[in-house]
Length: 293
Image (spheres, rainbow, N blue to C red):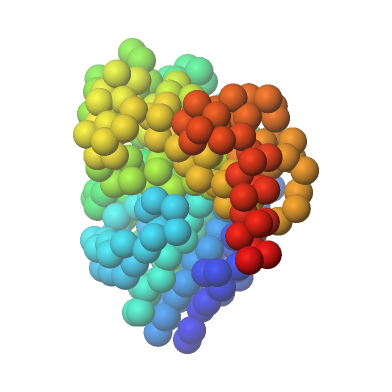
């Protein structure tokens, strides 16, 4: 069975129904069968949690458009927050359980189950497992869906327990809600988030929160990998994106500025003049002259 989305198209805003789906009041569960091939290209308005029932390898987008090799262990799980890009392909994809849920709708329920205050519970990238308890719960959910794909309170409870366990943080982090260490895979996924959200909040506080790491540690780890501070990395990505838009289409410069995360046209002009030595208008004019030659 081939399960594919177009990697070159704009990301989808809904999980494809490739297998058995069970709807609950504020989330749904998908049991996606193993496939000969699978490609994903998503940017969901809700949180997504997945757990694989066997090993998997392929290529995924961890930073912008580049697809990089990955290897995943059986019962390793991933949780990504709303609007996080999920893009990749596997030549022999495993059976996967996906849970798509509104973080805000379940915040109180998850916080109560974790016995923490709601303010310590934040949407973030989590890569974990395999763990005995999450493995057991995922197996129970799988068996239940295969036997009877109708929603019921028992199955809902199992799904909530799995979400809770996927989002569980070590006791040492409960004081701040953040870790002192940064997993390299999480950092790489945050790079992908930056490219997909250039028009949004990409402050150090936001990115560190997304990764679930204290800001100083995040900033040091980020610079070690990219060679730039988070601020300059984001700024350069915004400049690159704005340059491409200015050269490829005729949108007003003010629209290009807002689409790439600049606060105004004047902000983008000042930044271009400082970093590139030309204004956006000059860059566009130079590009048009080259096109006429």
